[in-house]
Amino acid sequence: MDAFTQMYRHSIEEPDAFWAKQALCVDWQVPFTRVRNIDIGPDIVSIKWFADGTLNACHNCVDRHVDARGDQVAILWEGDEPGLAERITYRELHGAVCRLANGLRSLGIGKGDRVAIYLPMIPEAAISMLACARLGAVHSVVFGGFSAEALAGRIRDCGARVVVTANEGVRGGRTIPLKHNMDKALESCPFVEKCIVVGRTASQVDWVEGRDIRYLDLVDTMNAECEPEWMNAEDPLFILYTSGSTGKPKGVLHTTGGYLVACALSHRHVFDYRDGDIFWCTADVGWVTGHSYIVYGPLANGATTVMFEGIPTWPTPSRFWEICDRHGVTIFYTAPTAIRALMREGDEHVMRIDRSSLRILGSVGEPINPEAWRWYFEVVGEGRCPVIDTWWQTETGTIMIAPVPGVTPLKPGSAALPFFGVEPVLVDDAGRVLEGVAEGLLCLRDAGPGIMRTIHGDPARFIETYFRRFPGLYFTGDGCRRDEDGFYWITGRIDDVINVSGHRLGTAEIEGALVAHQAVAEAAVVGYPDAVKGQGIHAFVTLKAGEGETEALRQELRDFVRRQIGAIAQPDVIQWATALPKTRSGKIMRRILRKLAEGKVEELGDVSTLVDPGVVAALADVARARK
Ligand code: WTA
Image 1 (cartoon, rainbow, N blue to C red):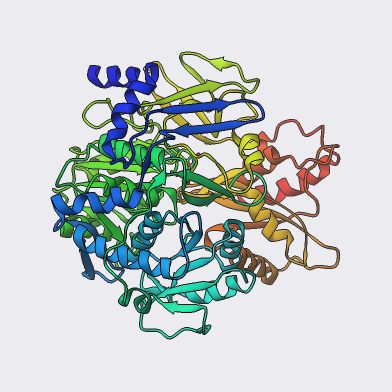
Image 2 (cartoon, protein in one colour):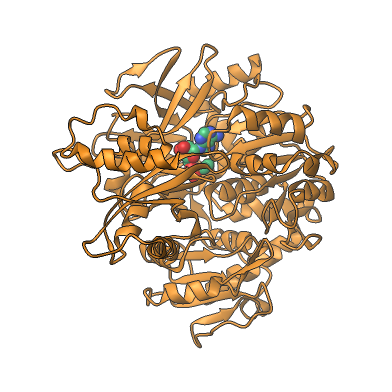
């Protein structure tokens, strides 16, 4: 612990010296001479790391391992169908990535061009990301669970010239019509020149001659060598969309050098990664967790990274453990929602499978409740594997707060201590910094080299969202408590972002989808606690005059939201409201709606500032009846 504390102090007190040394964990083509250059002012935020160095992320994740470990498995893929597996060595990965990079180049893709990737969890997803990185093209991966409409919005915002998809995805024994969704999305994206289609299944799909290209046809004739484009450390690596409390999703932009260093360093230390480990992060590559801990972190460290196409409960709730057993997984990283879902299925599904290969258990995406933590630790890990609760965000790029295995004492439910280079600060509503034991809003004074650099196409929103409220600090949107040992306990979002099964959703986005329906006059969406999903979605909907409050309409609205955003955004509860509780200035009182959704009718508090307190009484009657 002393050594760790010392190293942490060094990272905060002498960041230049610390990071100059740590950044050598990646290969630089032209070494940097400056470490950091950060300017956080009221009107300008400029974050630069290693700015005059050049490197290539793909070279670091693939090429540099070929000599030393060319025959080691880089990507260990397990298909949806149990037993279906594919092992891709570093040498093979190099060939596959180069061929696709050459293919993309033949389509005119180069430095700075955007490529949207809408793929299932198949090796081609990682290969596509790496091929883009090799060319200096900026990838934007869109989660395969998003609808055509959501996909189109992201393709438009990032201005992709080429997209990559699959004819279908396969998950939990069912197929997902990815190409069909892409076709619909591209109807409103005429600027997209080419659509590369991976054949995941044998199904035939509609084909647009001249635009659509089979993946195999593209890479077949390509050379297996492709010179990487040497990128400036601050050149963009990817854009990834995430929900905020207002407006449309934000294109979080990460750059090359700092992000890669942060990925490699955190993957090594937070998971105590060692040569020979089999590392499995169960996230989807469509989320930041998949970017940093399926692809960039593990591959930068020359690890074997497991990629799983399916779901934890299919064909049985033993699936995760069977995969651990079959492939000898040593480090396992998943989300509390999966842990809670499996916990509910009963211990026998875990106990009947050998888990002796496991060494470290990680958690990410939402607060892990102590009950789930203990089950993970005692039942899954047989009390031998530390549970590493990692707090971070799409914006921070990599893990910010987490215990270090074998070093930090563990407290169930706490993400423990800041990682190297991370300086958390708790503030109150007025922006006063809170010292010692305290609860407040979580900000970061320093977040290390992996933090986002801007919002693609909207630098003003970047400053407004993260840096305006508390000058000089990055505001995370999370509430947090610090205990007497200096341990951090994340209490959840304090803005209008909800976390459903570890998926981040803006309530404004769901409201926007609801009011787009012709029958809806107004809608307000809040989260409520759910035992498995973390939070459920409760929508209060006011219909236009003359529309009937029917069950059929309820179902139609659910489908409508699914078509516009995706199944993850479908409201669990739709409650009809003749009106919404508003203040005299017209603001919806969400605090009251949250209490109603939680069924805490007795705790509504002061409603005297409402225009019409009767509105609340009517909604409360329904809430009472539901209880
Ligand atoms: C929440 C996922 C508590 C938090 C990496 C954060 C967590 C948001 C934890 C980011 C954790 C993530 N404990 N809460 N260990 N990890 N969160 O961008 O509210 O999808 O702000 O990134 O998830 O979600 P995102």
